[in-house]
Amino acid sequence: MTAAALPGFPRPVLRRRELSLLLAVAGTLILGSLSLGLTRTGSLALADPAGLVAYLGALVAVHVALVVAGRRVDEVLVPAVGLLGGIGLLLAERLPQDLVVQQVGSATLGLASLQLIWLVLALVIAAVVAITVRSDRWLRLYKYTWAALGLGLLLLTFVFGGETNGSRLTLDLGPVSGQPSELLKVILVVFFAAYLAENRVLLADARVGVAGRLTLPPAPYLLPAGLMLALALGIVVIQRDLGAALLFYVVFLCLFYLATGSKVDIALGIGLFLVGFMVLALVFPHVRDRVATWLDPWADPLGTGYQTIQALHAFARGGLLGTGLGAGLPMIDGHLPIPAVHTDYPLAALGEELGMAGVLAVLGCYLVVVARGLRVAAATADDVRALLCAGLALVIGVQAAIIAAGNLKLIPLTGITLPFISYGGSSLLVNGLIVGLLLAFSDRGPAPPVEPRRRRLGRDGA
Amino acid sequence: MDPLTLALWAIRLAFLAALYVFLALVVRALLRDVRAASRDPAGALGRLVVVASGSLPAVGSVFPLDAVTTLGRDLGCSVVLDDAFASARHAILTFRGRGWYVEDLGSTNGTLVNGVPVAVALSLGFGDELQIGEVRMRLERGIG
Image (cartoon, rainbow over all chains, first blue to last red; front, side):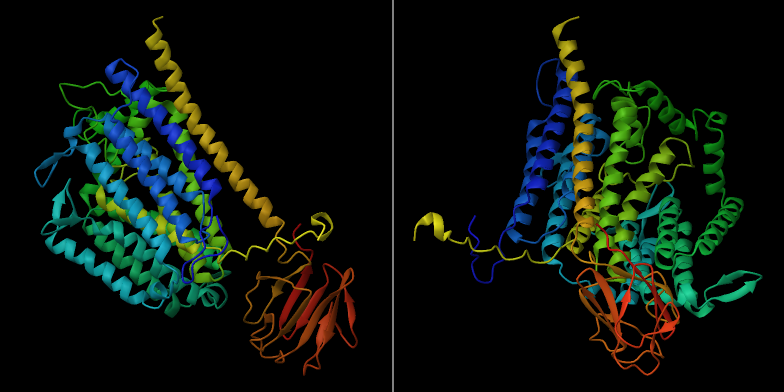
């Protein structure tokens, strides 16, 4: 590759590490597809080779686009996310295709085809954002505008939204429908990052004594954040999207701790959360049912406790190494044991077919994404960007942790998606946006110029 | 055992193993980055850690030091001190040979090293405390 670039065009930057990691991802996914194909057909064949090739092609296209764009952005995020997405695709191929059916034009698309389309679109968003976003001014300058926009979207959903599983989540705008609370998580992180960075010193140092040695930041500086959070939580609770409420609250606490380093505030925050949760459980029968199901799913094994019990059975059947892709999930009366397996319980399915080893590897991948995001945050030049990157990475990590814990019956199940693996257009696209922003903000600036090769006078005999 | 079952077992285990190989590769990449960061030349000579401060910089801030580092309220200084008692160009830290030296640049309120005012260029050891206005900073050894 020549060092001389065309004027106006950036010099391409080779990304060897990303390429080698992507090769490892490709190998892994091919093995997984072989395993599924062998179980299903009894012969050595890939399951859905076209889909696999299309997905790997999209990953390579993202890699090539980043190389050509010549920005020195993170090289681990794309492969890590690519592996998670690929596992999600394998799972979608493995599940019955009629779980989700959508008519696109004249073609009827099943679960795997739709998941593939959303995944590729998410990768496209990630690449476009990673290549084009250079400044975060447009994010930080208009933080209240963004916040208003996000809340407006939520209100719109509340008024016009359609109900799924007892929650008003989906907004249908003609042909387009989506879940605005997915986008709201990015908008809230932007708002919190800009706001906390601006008031960091005040929140941390200008403290007012409350009782004894207990101090709090002065109320005027705490109020906007508290109000914003209460509003978001209120709407989300009214919409009965408890998972999103929990996610927002945990991410807010994490960012607050990152900004101020105050352990007292975090303890207070957790205390407030516990009190709030008890009040919620007393007021809303919906929340009370969730908690009751969590504490004793066997009280109503064929009703509310059904999914929880089946998920536990799935993990138990999987054991250490799993039953193998395609070999688990026996049908009960022609139905899947876990009806919402593709959205709420993908981890239970993975637990059954890949075993504890597979689940731990998947959780390890999320850990890598979070670690990488925090590293990007630590390397940024200023507070807003640092908090923004940390918040975006934590959104993915905390969301994965909440739904994984819900699947394992460690906490009451809340209906949020397992990032990059669950089926769901809004979720995949927004997670693509998050990866794109993390990539864009991990830019290490232009590469130092390549030194011209010096002629060695002595040896050339000049 | 028929060969197909055997092949299935092998492929299943290989798939799980591949997941962990990928994770191992990623972890190796992460570790390499951490080591590279600790070899980063920025701040290799030393760094200033803020231990007490009236306003800005906040307590806990870390400034990697160049061989010549100016301190003061002026925005052109390498370390900007937003302190009411600091002069525009207050003091200068220089790395000469093997150690750090501090000089006061004729500031109004003076520069203190471990509580003693600096009169001439004074040698500064790692762990010494530098005070300008209300800001107290500790000189620490650089990473790596």
